Amino acid sequence: MTGPVLAVDQGTSGTKALVICPERGVIGTGFVSVGTRRGPGGLVEADPEELYESVIIAGRRALAEADEPVTALGLANQGETVLAWDPDTGMPLTDALVWQDRRAESACAELTEHADELRRLTGLPLDPYFAAPKMAWIRRHLTRDGMVTTSDSWLVHRLTGTHVTDAATAGRTQLLDLDRVTWSPRALDLYGLSGERLPGVVDCAELIGTTTAFGAEIPLTGLVVDQQAALLAQRITAPGGAKCTYGTGAFLLAHTGDTPRRGDSGLVSCVAWRLGGRTSYCLDGQVYTAASAVRWLTDLGVITGAADLDRVGGAVPDTGGVTFVPALAGLAAPWWRGDVRGSLTGLGLDTTSGNLVRALCEGLAAQVVELAEAAATDLGTPLDVLRVDGGLTRSALLMQTQADLLQRPVEVSALPDATALGVGALAQLGAEPGLTLADALPDWKPAAVCEPRITPDHAAERLAAFRTEVTALLDRTPV
Image (cartoon, rainbow, N blue to C red):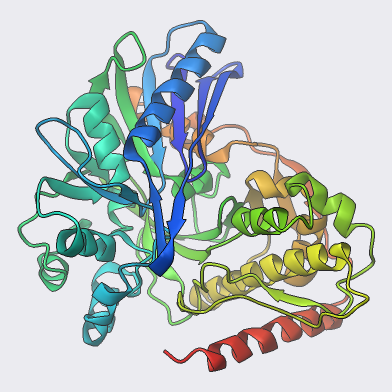
């Protein structure tokens, strides 16, 4: 068994680093917050240098706390965040367009007639959420210089000098042939990106390069997109299971085996990971705003933070007739209407802050139910259980609401940092290829299991109220 590894999760709102020992578990941690800038026209940007510095500082803090050498490094990334950069100097040429950025709507609109073809090729719907529209937008509006890639390729180049991306992250671009797991000349041509110098597509666990950015030389042996890392950490490595991560957004992934499943439910079909040249696939559904919706409620002064959800929401028995569709950055799967804005209905003079909190929890949970039902439709079988992780799982109110509306048990992970633990397991695999995936993964057990406490009829009634408001929003917002 390999020694301790450094696992770094570079996320939207911060970078978390763990030093993970196979025998002793987490022996060092580090965290650095990162900011995003929002502006008109759907602008959501981050400073690339801030992202890179957060990786280095968080990693060094974790190493300092562990106070022992590591044998390998794993890096998880945001998935669809994109920037242009100079391959000679490694310096960014643009800010990073964060996955929530919507300015590439125009690039998508021009390709509407090719939407079905792109979905067949890549598994992804035509939406500015993905990387390719952002890459095309950067080339049209910001710069023709350097290379334009997802943020992981730039971070890896800064760390090791290599120019690669892993198969799972490549699958988030809408430029990857999903069946062959190679760049698609047709997709590149449609986006006007045929001349781009794209990174090599590598396995998620292999020797990629070495870095001295954290001090002593460390091999980089694990690379993956954040949600797939969490799927791994939840030990969902075969069809039949699903997980949902409640972070800045909420993301439900269901494993589909060694062949992609292209259903009609509105979910994304993508690469889960590629190990030893063998590709595993998953279905993926997204809620654009989860913790970011809680921050919005915080900014309004309704609560002081996520820790208030249970206290404030628990002060009332129900939503008081309030329905909240928290589409504060648009509706993702299964609707794919990023142009839609949220709604808050059923307000009265008797509406309290507790009602608003409960309505938010119901709105988030109802969107996840939509994703779970879509996954069940595409898989042809209902999900038996949902495993969950991420910061918002600390809210017992939200988790109970999720179980109630889903009408299935919700297993709350005892692993607070599933993404980092997942990429840490990949780093161990890459450093010791003879290791099995099961041996590399952390032990899994739920910290809590939430069972439904309401009847199916009551759940259906609450979901119907939510769906009525979603339909009204869609009808009010012409495509």
